[in-house]
Image (cartoon, protein in one colour):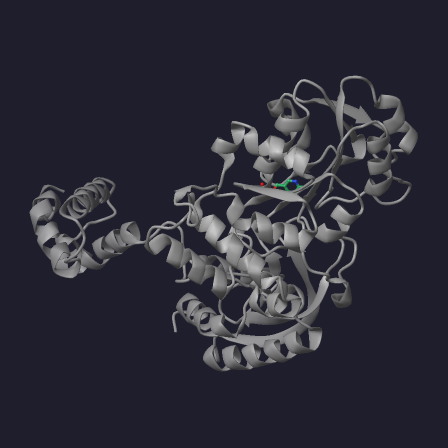
Length: 463
Ligand SMILES: *Cc1c(COP(=O)(O)O)cnc(C)c1O
């Protein structure tokens, strides 16, 4: 063991070797990696993992050290190929931005902007006004304000309109949405008391009527998102509730979650009202996410009657919840596309993927399977299977969208081993696992990513 310790390369020797490969990595980073690597080697000698002094030659161990250093230099937030077929995949960053939105972000990031500067008067302007006009035009609402995400939108809404009083909500809508957003907890934070009415499965108009009192500030409707009550159930439609609220001089508020500005019914996706319909139905304030079905950046969008939105604009909390210029740039560019719905459908990846037709997906799956079959020949077999994709983000939870999956059956490793290896490919490829098959849904992997997916698979198979 003494001889082994004598053969242990010095930190200086490791550093010299590493410097030859990594000319641009800062000295402190390299030195730190070399010191830690030397500690690891020392530990390996102690535990008997290394027995031959020749194994400690710098040339022999350099690849390991190089691997550690390149790992530490790699960005933590990375591009991932989403082969899972969930269009608004929250864990994979929800919506992919349209080219127009990406360009707008680049522009806003590259120079000064008129974020809060009125170019007509040369005086201080307001960042909210950058998208307010477009939001009113596209939703039919009187006014709008945008915050960091929909959770903040609900917080700002309740804090502004219901603090110190009660908001009435059906027990069927006391939901928790992914990432521990719980309606009752958000209400508690806002200082609004929750007045629960009805039961989990059934709530009637009379339940709401009986709960109204002098402390009531609003009637609230929360979209159940990724959860449905089926069987013996009933709820009061928001427009009927709006009439009740208005008869008592109260505002009707609706947290839509995944609000959309596009009519998906021609693509078989019903069950989710678009924001303009909700406004038309007489709801006073509506909140929804910017990065769910809308297909834009993370944002919380609040639209509705001017008297209520104006109060939110004056709330000090808005200063803490506002979104930054990059978000506003992406949101404005995304919204502009909606002025022409067909253009929006083609340009916004979320819409394009949600409206991709089964025949098109089948053709693309065939093309991808043929390509991968050739590349992976001898390592795996590739086939096709009819299945369903999901929208994700809590939208249309009951409705699968027909698709064709590319099924990869590895011959020498298991499918779950393949899945694991694909996570450390560059870029990582996420897909579905079905017994002995790893599957890729072409709905979320378009042609421009085929080469990347192919490269990830080649790395995983060591081709
Ligand atoms: C998703 C969702 C939220 C939270 O929105 P974020 O943009 O993720 O903050 C709130 N309410 C409902 C009904 C939702 O579906």
